[in-house]
Length: 489
Image 1 (cartoon, rainbow, N blue to C red):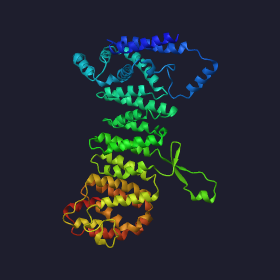
Image 2: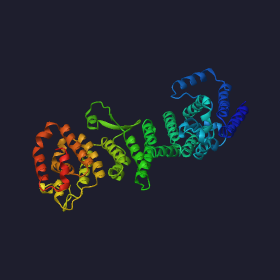
Image 3: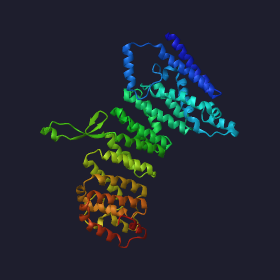
């Protein structure tokens, strides 16, 4: 009986390549798929289970997120060689979601078929336009086989390679490629939640994830990052470190496209957000009270602080991305840095705020650094505008730094800003005079949050600094500094 089943499986694998790929019409495809479906269903019927086995299977299925239409078999077991599995996986996805990759044109059907063939599509995808009556039945069969893929609880190398092949072959089919990644991410979530990720297959998983995160189409990047956030917590810390460092390396490389950098930094932010604050238990004894009351939790792992590979990325890559010309990259870099700083000790956030101010003060001091002790108003950063050759930093760099500054202002108690308040206030006042309106608006938001977070204390303490800075700014102001009127005042 077992040999008969294997023979039937071999016949099934053989016809899958020969008949499905070369079908001249949708009706032939449907007959071939029905034959395959029947052979997979017969495997279930031929195996008899005992009472205990039936009960175990029933309980297992009740907790499965995806019902497996062919639980006795798996796609990789039905294929004789990897090439067969690759082609069948691409066939299912291209045939199911390739309808919208081209426009039906009866008068120019020949050139349409050639164009679709050049993209790697199957002949039947064009013929089906004239056989719409078969579309519903064909989609129903294709959906059943795709559900079979999604129900696989094991992260097998063969199946991962077949999905990777489908992504590569759909490089000119954005809709098919998008749906391929949707199915990959859903399958990974299902399989990882059951068995985790074996270290042997993790490099291949990382390759597939990286391909989706760095895809040229933003819809695919957003989908992959959003779905990854739902199961990245099943990674071990060593796997997270390997994956995170790979993303950092993508941001370092000069030849990396801006789309890939955007996806990488977006994924970095998503990973950091999975480190959640949690309270630690205690018995109320003195020794317990002296310990930290809050810890960070990643999955089931509890940590005292963020791992060093995440903290090091702040200076190694995120600060540099804050002045990237692409707005979306700056925004995601700001989110990533904000996510990291919100999960750090307060002292780290304060030091980061001072570093942001130092970067904003570049070029404002002729003979001293902006972090030196402030001795008088003549050394304040906003006085730099009176120098003939002073130049502001580029608008996109200033906007990125101010984005982080705004986040930190919201989270740092105002009392910790008082020791160097003249420096901080003067720096913000300087950027109210920036020629770029986006920078002036960002600075105004910073002042807004200063006022909202500190309330009446801010308003009663700062009028003298406000009047001094404003009066000094209005004296002999260069023509381009009329932009100051567009600021918070």
